[in-house]
Length: 420
Image (cartoon, rainbow, N blue to C red):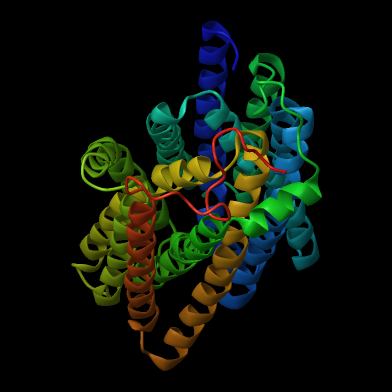
């Protein structure tokens, strides 16, 4: 671990990156499905498919980005990822055909595959285990600040052109590239001199780590729900109100609610439940928030219902987001933090991609049949089921932590054991 001054500088850069990434991402992505359907004439399913391609490509390759960062260091991989992501977002704004949009999605995904898991691993490497919840919460708060500013800027620029939104959002990632290149200290998870394991050794260790695999599988449901705010929510909001500007308002409320509620919720949960238990509670709230959209329909109360939905959803995400990273960092060996975070993001590849496509498809089905509540009932039921699974995972962890009971070797790598 670097000295105190360099450590603080590294934390500051990573927190700034979180804010910049969120601002750039949320400036464009929530409006992308509206742009593709309204401006370019794509179907809801096609818009969902574009987002699914980005999601699946990014999370599918994140293991390799994380493993590369474990080997050569976190800084060059993070910086390269920011630069590549900026190019992809420029393409989103300037493209006007499905082929160009899909290519931009792949380029943007490659950038994310390099920096996202690596950034979380870098943050975990800068803190002892007892400080990780605080640092991940600060990172989430910084991201929340960015996600407050981003949608508002997107709505301000929307009347001019979507191309301007693409260029502006890409510029945020370019600034993060410059900051990472110039100011991020050299970091890795192997400060004690242990060699970095080969990728095949890391994959073998992951395959034996049943607790980690179970948690990652459960997170597919978290990401399925999480990504509905990129597809189903904006599509339904525009359908109800007839205006794309309401999307920016909903995301601003979502972001502000997350900022306000995150610290007290994390503190409250940290004093009463395990990190995995906090994730379970967060997922339950996310499902409940999306379920509220089932009663939103045309009329004076529709906007209030949608805003309430975003507040409840934001509370759940604010609780689940940092605590899931704490669980992952706790389960991962230090010399393979990047790779393990990359594997953890496979849950986003599966759950997020399925959520993107299913959200668009369910919207199309609901619109064609007039059963407008259908998607939101499905999302609420899924939230309850995933929360129950996470609660069971938390109880299983607690039983294994009982005094006098040695953890199974396949479940928890012991201190210093690392990866064989």
